[in-house]
Length: 75
Length: 342
Image (cartoon, rainbow over all chains, first blue to last red; front, side, top):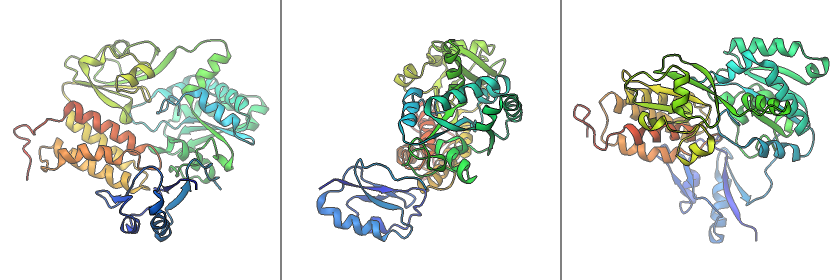
């Protein structure tokens, strides 16, 4: 299975904090309430939690990306 | 950005754009939003054809059929010179290239912001990836290149090796202005070109608001070469060499720059918008003699906390600047009269 990482679009994130609630193992909040995401691949045993954290972001700022996949096209 | 800010090697960038599929676009970046810098606007005002030549050579090389000459709208002389120079060119050049005034903000010159402005007339940085060379103007591979780097390319095409860099020398010097210096020159030589630093100079800000403070005694021997400077922990950045003289207060100057950088955040990314405001507020309290006990430790922690956490490098630049100020100016313990409140 390919390694996945959590990618954040910082321009979208509004600090709703749900991700840090759902995935405290990998996501902490900074002094201003914005997520600090642990770098590197998501450990296998946390993948389900990571998917839930990504899906629960109200502004769709998070994505699970296969590592070293080609970047998305700009529309 | 070439010589705009980050010193990303020109060759690698051109090859990346040339290697991407489909016709490309070139943006000649003359936004120059750095308040202390004059070198790009001076170059465009005095040698507009050299810049246009460079942009067209870049277009030829990377396979671009459209060229945007992105010139800061506040740089009137540069804007006029570039517009007139383009009007003098053959029809083929005029069909490919056009002048596009850039908004006068700090982040408008950031690569993705330039692409965003061409696409949607909004000069704010966008999330990466994709990078402009992958997908930029209208989704096409796009080269965003600083105008000085393009002028260098034009000189190389004329078999004249550039071998010089443009610097804006300002602050506490006899004759502030834009100077051309050979690339192996030192900060001391640059200051001599500008008539020398006034006596009692305390520090030199190298690289502008995204650069860093260097002790004035050490600065003279610094070689103005990107690689040498990087090894010494500095950066040539946009080529600003600004002298902090005796009359200026280093902490007040630092706080002033931090407030400017905080105001110039594009206000899109939380860690940049709120982080830089916190940094600016703490730096201001420290400079005006009313710091909270937590300000100094917070400043040291926040410079690492905001770095790399924006869509663009704005927070990184601000962090580099603030870290250099902390290293050079911040007392280990607050001095008398600047005692911390609990």
